[in-house]
Each structure stands twice: as structure tokens, then as C-alpha cells.
Amino acid sequence: DVVLTQSPATLSVTPGERISLSCRASESVDTYLHWYQQKPNESPRLLIKYASQSISGIPSRFSGSGSGTDFTLSINGVELEDLSIYYCQQGNSLPYTFGAGTKLELK
Amino acid sequence: EVQLVESGGGLVQPGASLKLSCVASGFTFSDYWMSWVRQTPGKTMEWIGDIKYDGSYTNYAPSLKNRFTISRDNAKSTLYLQMSNVRSEDTATYYCTRVRGIIVFDYWGQGVMVTVSS
Image 1 (cartoon, rainbow over the protein chains, first blue to last red):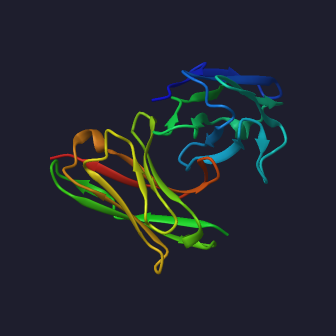
Image 2: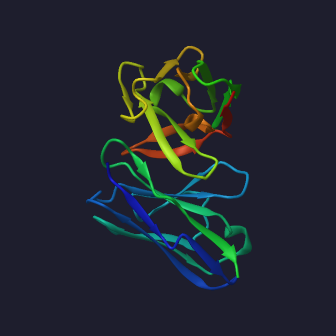
């Protein structure tokens, strides 16, 4: 199985700052790496697909990059509504797997 | 508007069976692969399996393949998850998801909670 390692596990943020979240795969997943946001008491929602493709309705401050085994989700100017858990997920090979998540909290 | 509404969860005893349902609306259900994903109380996300748009093919997580079965009824726009011989570690929130492309879960239901306890 492809293991996705997300870091950090928790990130304390100040509104307005630019942050980066990491997702590393145990083997190459090409660009079949997707990001989800889960706000408290809500279902996950798709944030970025295929490592860097934007999703309609998602604020432009969210962006993704990477390929192979190293991926990054960036938020350019964190807002309070972004305090959530962020998960990466690979669709390259069965079984499809998720990272353990990075929780964004207020500093 | 795409909507996925799960039902059928609750408290169940170890060793019992349970069938979850997911009613889809707002899109042509029979055009899409569908999937089940679960989230443990500790927030770990686990893919359970998926089913082809016509119901002719399924994939499962190897650890769950022998106890979980995914099916669908396109006439009713409904996805199912049959769980058998449930264990305490099956306690989780179960999500129905629509699948696009190279396995992108583009829409999620609100989730249904399953608690396995005696």
C-alpha cells in the first residue's frame, strides 16, 4: 500500500500568513494526489485535484504543487475559516489511501 | 446540486450485520463510479471500496474485502454497503462519495455513524 505521510501533524497559524503543508508518498503516485479540507463537524470537501488543479468554488488562496512523491498544499493568506484538517489522498494505485491529516489551529 | 444522503447507521452488536444506503440526486447516478470511505473517531480516513457505474465491477480494501460488499441500484440512484460480522474497529463515520477521473472523491455525503458495541 502507498503510505502518505503528512507534516506537520498540527500547525499553529496567524491570520494572514502564508503556510505550506507537506504530503510525502512512500512510492511515486505521479500527479494522482488530491487534497481535501474538513471543517469541524462537516464532511470533507475536495480542495485540489491532480496535485495542482484548482476546483471551482475554492478560494484562489489555496494552491497545490508537486509530483512523484513530494507534494505541497499552500495557503496564501490564511483566514479564520481555514481552520480545518487537511488530508491528502492518492488515486494512483489500489488500495487508495489517505494521509493522517494536518490540523490547522489558531496561534 | 449534487446531493448524497446516507442512512442506516446506528448502534450494532459485534458479529452482527448492517446495510448502509446512500441516495444520490442532482446528477446522472448511472454515469459514475461510486465509493465508500470511512473515518474513525480518531479522524483516520480509510477507503473501503468502489463500484463501477453499471455495477459490474468492484474494488475493495484488502482488509475489508471478506466482510464488506458494495452494490448499487441505478433505477433508485442508490448505493449500498453491506457490512457483516462487524467488529469494534468498524466503529466510524461512513461516507458515500462520487468518483471522478483517477480516483478523485469530488462529492461527499454528510456521513452516517456506525457504533459497534455490546
